[in-house]
Length: 143
Image (cartoon, rainbow, N blue to C red; front, side):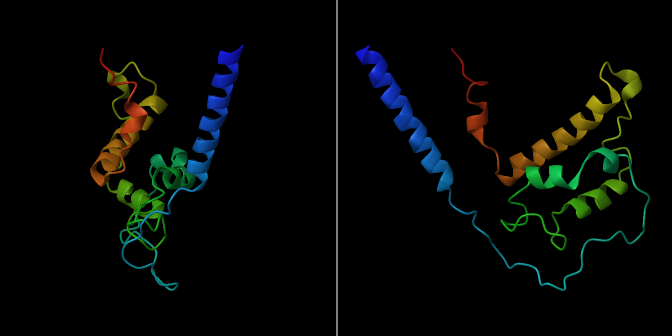
């Protein structure tokens, strides 16, 4: 019974520490300047047609994946790393995220689309230093 009380007190303290650390997270460091209010948003000079990527990959998903884009300012319509810029760039590579290899795969069309985009974003995250290795500590634990 005494051990149970000690363990429960320890768990409560641990939970409080975790909550406190989460609430007091430091704000991301921002570099450069915030764009002007009258800035020009991304636009496609060739006005290429929409791709199938736009049908399933949303702005909310992009902004959730890259909250610190643009040197800490986050996604913004006038900064280079925005959903609009990504979508415009994808129009110049119409096979990207479209499951063009469906005939040679055991995966579904949707699985292939998402796999291609996930692999691309994994490279971006790794190259930009946003990799959180704590997420993988159990996967790469060797006995």
